[in-house]
Length: 577
Image 1 (cartoon, rainbow, N blue to C red):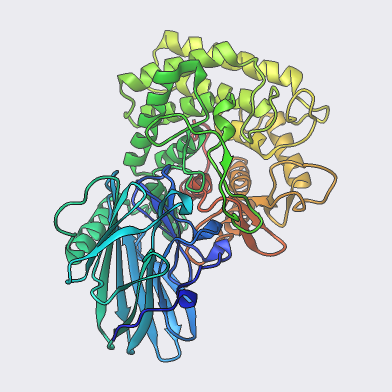
Image 2: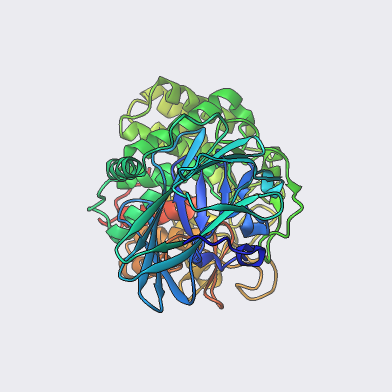
C-alpha cells in the first residue's frame, strides 16, 4: 500500500545529541545516521565536497527510513565493519534497517545500501529522500522514473539514482523529494540503493545482494583480528573507524598531517599496515611538494583548504555554520616532528620507500630551518615558541636517527639537533618547579607536554618527565578526565569539555611509568566516554555526560587503539620510538 507523506510528515529532522549518531563510511566519504534512521550529514562525492545531506546544521536535505508509531531506538555495528543496524522496538515487535556505504568506496560514486527487515512483526515505515547539494542550495530536479522502481535526477552537479522504490512518489514544492509508506510482512525485507556521483551513472544500478556480499567481504579483508590487544572489540572498532575515515578528521572534512601521524602510530603498534602505508604516502607527498612550507592540513587530494566562511544555515545548536578553515595560514612546527615519528614507524616495519626517506630528510631540514620561529602549536593558538612543538620535533629526530636504514652519519646529523632542541627548551621553558611549561612566557601546564617523553624526546625517568606528569594529573584532571590547559580562573570543565585525546595520552604516560592500575583507570574512564555506536567525539561534557565537538574524531580513536595495543605488554624503553 502506497501513501505519500504530507509536507509536515516529511518535515525537517531536528538534530540529536551527538552520542546518538552512527557513522557509515567507505574511505572516501561518510554519513551520520540518527536514531530515526535519518541521514543528517553527508558530503559527496568526497569528504571535502559540499554537503548533500545537512540536516545536522539546519538544512532540509536528508534520507530517512523511520518506523510508524511509537518506538525505542537502538542499533549496533556488525563486528569489524561499519555496517550499521538501526534497530527499533515498536509496540508490535522489532524492525531493523541494515545500512552501509558500499565498501571499498569509489572516489566518484557513493553507493548507499539500506535493507529494511521486519524481524518478528509486520512493519510500517516512512521512507523519505531529499538530497540537496551545495549545503542545501540545490534541490533535487529532473526527476524521472522507469516504472520499475528506479528514480533518477540531479542535485547541483551531482547525478542521483535511487532503486528499490517503485511505490515512491514525488512530494514537496517542485517535486524536490521522494517519499513513500512502506509495509512489510513479518520476516520480509526490502532493499534500497542510492547512488550519488559527480559523473554519469552506469547503465544498470548495482545488484543489492551482490553489493552487500562484496562489502562484507571487503571489511573482513581490511580489518585485522587484533587479538593481541586489550579491549579487543573496541580496538577493532577504533581501527575500523580509522579505515572508514582513512585517518581523516571527519567533521572538518580535511586531512590533518598530525591526525594522519597519530593514526599511523596507532596502527604501527596494533597491526594493520595498510593504514600505516596510507598515512606515510599522504605525508610523504605533502612534504615533497611543500617542504618547509608544509601546511597543517589539506584537501583529500592534496590541494589547499579553502578559507573559512559561513553558510546561510542555523548550524548545530551551540555550534556554527562554518565551512573551510583558516588553518592553511598557520605554521605548526610539531607537524614536522610528527611526520618524522611516522616515517620512523614505517622504517621499523620495513615500509619506508626511497621517497619516504627523501621526505624524512626534507622534514628534518625543515626543523633545522624553522624551529626557532613562533608557531600555532598542537592546539592552533596564537603563535609562540611552544615547548611541545620543539620537544616533539626532538622526538621525531631521535626516532629517525634510530630507525633501521638511517646510516651512522645521518643518525649523528639528526641526533645532535635533537639534543640541542631539548637543551634549548629546558633552558627556556622549564618551570621553577622542575616541570615543563607551555612556552617561555606561559608558565602553565598543557596536556600536550605528556607526549614528547612517550615518543622518546627524553626518558621516562627523567625528572622533568615525572614532574610534568605529576603536576598535570594534580592540576588539570578530575575523576580521570583530562583537560588540555587552563583557559582562565574558572573551574575545569567550564571553558571546554574534557579532552579525550589527553585522557588517553595520560593513560600512556602512566603506563610508561609502570603505574599499570592508574593507566587502566585512565583508559577505562575515557574508553567509556562514547555513545551507543562506540564513536568518540573531541570533547566530553563531564557534568552532562554529553559528547562535544567533532564527531567522530579520528585522533581520539587513534589514541584509544594505541593504548589497547601498548597495554598488552609492559612498557619497554623505545617502544614508541
